[in-house]
Image (cartoon, rainbow, N blue to C red; front, side, top):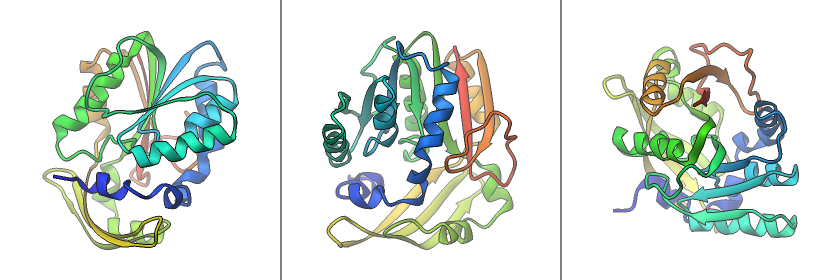
Length: 252
């Protein structure tokens, strides 16, 4: 059975790059650089890299990057962009729920969810975190964002999504289940060929306590969680109920 996120990203590379959340790449990479002290000797894994926006910006700055994604269509767009920029980036078609790397990277990033939160079961989402941990060296660092469960408990999700309507996307239905912390939504999406698709989406929101517990079980010793926004990653930003996403920085 094809899942909604697989159907969405079959032919959505051009539309994806028009999304509002893709506009913060430069300052998000600035934050990543500050977290690794601009050490260009490290190896970086970009999980759920999509069309490669973070991978490409990091490679432009001299970092060695491997990007993985479930969508071959997204990866083809990333490869084309990297080729145009004359950048050497290893883009790999891979399922983040399956382990393919072991102790190979100093840093893993997983931004704008990168697959995490999109999976249909909590176990699958946990597997993504588990494999990110496996991919890291003994003293590795993990930087990622995820959906903040505190937000829908205090706000109307559909109103937020419609206000922040994405390129080629509109929200038809939306409800949040407080028993599972899952948002069930119906989106109308226009793909790169102008075809309309109606997708039934299901995304998991997480509390800070859940994320901290997951990471502790995976061997991370230092876990910091902040609020964030598009292009605004800052250790001085305290997480609040007004933050749609959380920024997580974890170290082994």
